[in-house]
Length: 242
Image 1: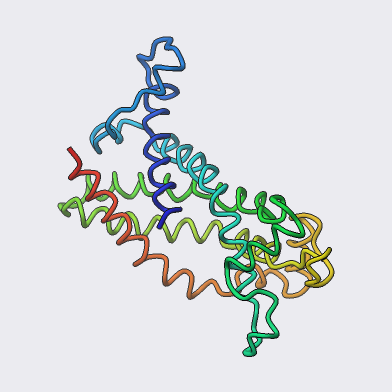
Image 2: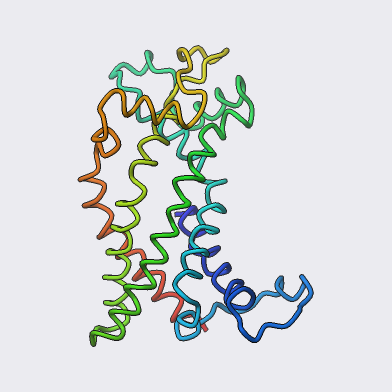
């Protein structure tokens, strides 16, 4: 919830920033403080003046922003998910707090942020999510008589499908990196992947191209309803704000 709030909030800010600067044909030189002023979010009518590539760029910027929160959270989650022993005493980590403490004790802050570069790469595919969301929103607004919430629902769900179709292989590699042993004093095994390329190569050697799409179907099926409803809620709240 916190990560999605940060992502959507920063997305709105970057949309406004790009709308007023890079994609404003009437822009004038302004001091940095002018862009730091707190303004109300742009209504949908003004956001549509931002070209699709502007929405896509804002998506990449928002993805990079939230990555610094998402990376350690997803790292800890990934390590807990691969503890398959039914006997709790045989598990390395008792829970998320214990996992955080142990990783920080033996590997410091860099250990917690293990996989940050892979997270940044994965979330750069927000380019396709928010770019396609704008395209679907425009098409549904122009070609149908659907209500605003219905447009948000279908545009949100379809754009999420586009995102996962383009980003899923990078997510598979990211998970490999985040579940790779950290070694050292943690005593969790021998590290296998020194970089992103080595992890991507290992996936291909083990399962070929299909290895990059392992688990895709349930992820793809979940993406539509989850993101469709999230965008309905987000856009609805934005419209309701004074």
